[in-house]
Length: 85
Image (tube, rainbow, N blue to C red; front, side, top):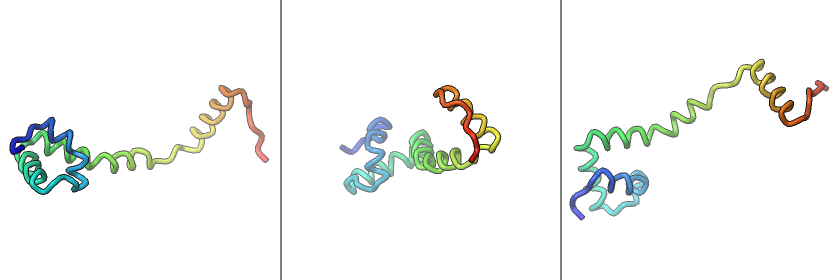
């Protein structure tokens, strides 16, 4: 296989990014990604996803909202209000 399409590249993306595709295939994929703006953007967004998820989940919930949410969930579950010890 010497010609690669975007679809084929996406199918091989995980192996490509983990460095486990054969060297000749890596060369072909490197060449395709370098010359394809859509694949370049796709690879960049794919690589950025873990950081984006970490950043999105790193913020703390304000204490008042946390108390309100817990009270709501307990009421839905039927536990009622909890007393502080």
